[in-house]
Image (cartoon, rainbow, N blue to C red; front, side, top):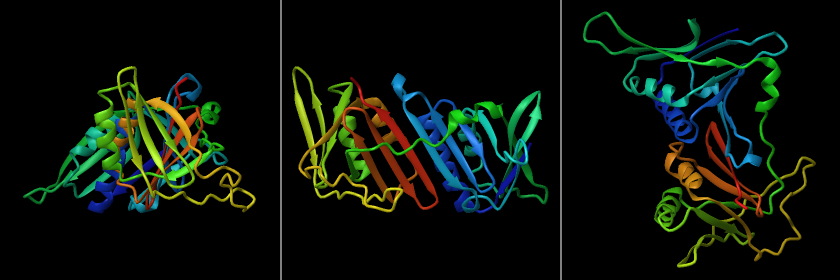
Length: 284
């Protein structure tokens, strides 16, 4: 089981750092799955127990100049590691002006992801800062716990408004209530609602558009028989929504959410070679 990778390009390094910073805001611990051509950051708190889950997928070729990986076995050519993303985020903070960053799976008293950051130097010798980030190796028998979550059979799928705007609205609402109702329809309309004994506040968004979805058999899978005006809604923990909106540094080119009425809200943020899925369960 071996892994080593290298980033030289500054833009790639900055982008990778932003992705890690986002994940550090969303998860205290997560699973890093290394495959031949992709990296995955996975948080799989059981939604049934009220936990959020996350699936972030990166094409390694768009970030790394070198990437070598040998999995646990020839037929299972992957590595699953448990790590604290905040530790990785902190290590990358020292790499902002780095000439190169090398990442390697090592064994120093315990398994570690070792980052060797080569910093620019005035002399001919280079300065190298090394960070050892402890990780846990997840055994093969537990891998099935970390499969990609399937897209739920949603009632409504809708593009999100500008995330900064949405964030400022939700930030103001969080002072009024611990939960927020997110509702949307197939006419491109979405409402954010707070309802308490003392106050009722609604913010309306119109003209957002509804993404086309194609099912596995190739047919259009949008709920065709649904009344376009009819709202699908879910009441969710406002802090978990704000965690996503305030924490994301992916700056997506596309952002959408799928609502399964009264059950779950599934957010998808896409930016070129990064996709981030985030699932927030509805409150009873």
